[in-house]
Image 1 (cartoon, rainbow, N blue to C red):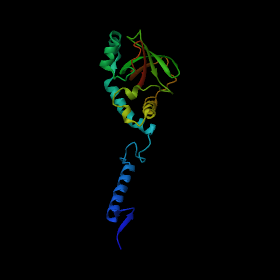
Image 2: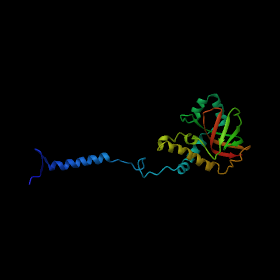
Image 3: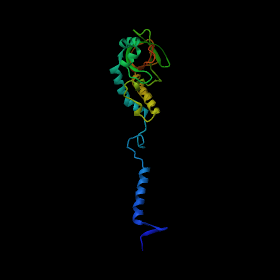
Image 4: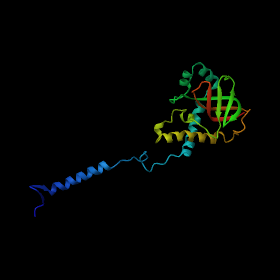
Length: 213
């Protein structure tokens, strides 16, 4: 018996049909197969982003950077007064909406409002210095101050924003654990932190260290 299949007037050999079909099947599989690297964004096994874990793991590095790079207000104040742009470039990390500058100062806390204290700092009579103490800590100064944390390290914008609040929350647990934030008015405090230079006459500082004198 012949091994060929008859179609009209032509003949197609089974020896050709078999390998051809196999090649076509392999092509279909290759096209429809997605290669996923373990640990990548597309890997379903990748661990979901945890704000608490990220904040706890990241804040120590942020703290170290701010402590090591903080500029004494005696130097920073005159520099900003003379040339805000130059001071921002020299002492800060650019973020696209203004440089974030690490700073340290000592002053007397005034009356607090919504967790924010105005601090009277010697030598900064023309500058409104405010310090965040919570319970709500706003802004991304601690996330952005070192320049080492970028959007590309996260899955999306929401996760990137969550990273900022996670660091703030971790800071709050460490910094204000032994500080009565409801009773700072009239007290002398030493602060090390960071602020975004938008208004040279108004600084809103997010601390990494607060000491009540």
